[in-house]
Structure formats: structure tokens, C-alpha cells
Image (tube, rainbow, N blue to C red; front, side, top):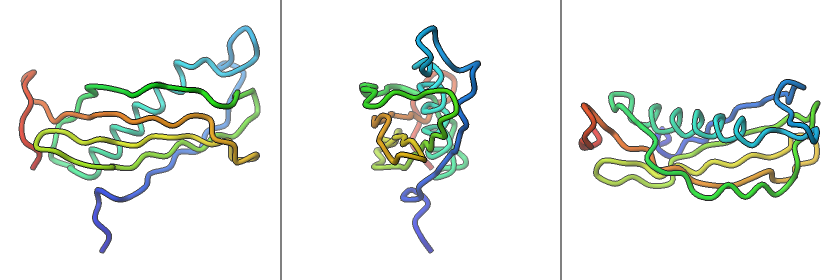
Length: 120
């Protein structure tokens, strides 16, 4: 059986008009929200009894524009784990062109009552 921390998670999204800015491209905040969701999912599925919060995201360097009607695939995968946290890789591609949209990482911390606690 494959180790749950090395499982790749995937979300496919159709970019609708309501996600677009005045220039006709995706508002970056939507992509950042989806990336945060995916990082949480990867960490929580690897450690189901943990209670994760987002501590840090790496730089979002958008490499290709996303336009209305594009279909985007967002991926997440646990890269490494420490005592209380996990580093999650998150990236997205345009499903039609296969061009990379962005690549970053998130650090998700297991926390209870506002304090870091060890991963189970």
C-alpha cells in the first residue's frame, strides 16, 4: 500500500466568468484560495486526526495567464513532515495546453487551542 503522505491529490476546475478580473484573466486570490484548500486536503488526508492550519505559503509566481473557459488542474502532495507540521507542494496546469500556471508550497501546522502539537 502506498504511504498516504506521498499521495497526489487533484482538483479540476472550469474557469467561469465570475472568477475573472477587469483584464479578463483569473483573479489571483481565487487560485490562492484553491491552493490553500488543496494543501489542507493533502495534509488532512495524510493525518486524519490532526487539526491543520496554514502557517506559510511560498511565493505565487504565476507563469501563464488563466482565462475564462480554461480548465485548470490543481495538484497537491505532501513533500515532507516534521514534528508538528507538513510541507505541501501545490501546483496547477492548464489542462488543455499543459502549460504550468504556478508552483508553490505551503506549510500546514497541527494546532489545538492556538498551539502547535505533535503530528499523530
